[in-house]
Image (cartoon, rainbow, N blue to C red; front, side):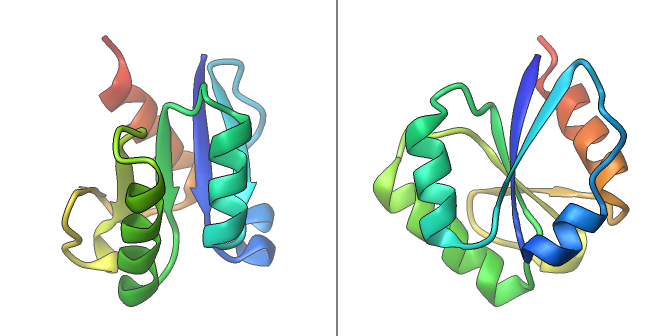
Length: 107
């Protein structure tokens, strides 16, 4: 089981949630404060997917890393631009992004 924290506007992320996949659990956070709270309460989060614009995604990555330097890896669609410490994914819908992250995290 992979636990993925998706950070982005709740209305757009919630509407794009994939069908339940028994191998991926998705948590949703709407902003930095919400993401930090979810990470603090769910130490089993395996990856963070940033679904914000370039400036917002970079600020989220910095803010989370400041609070949790040894935290899970960050991913973002290529459309978010190059962000230090964030792995780029091909642009696509949330189900495809979640599947790609799960594939990359497989041992």
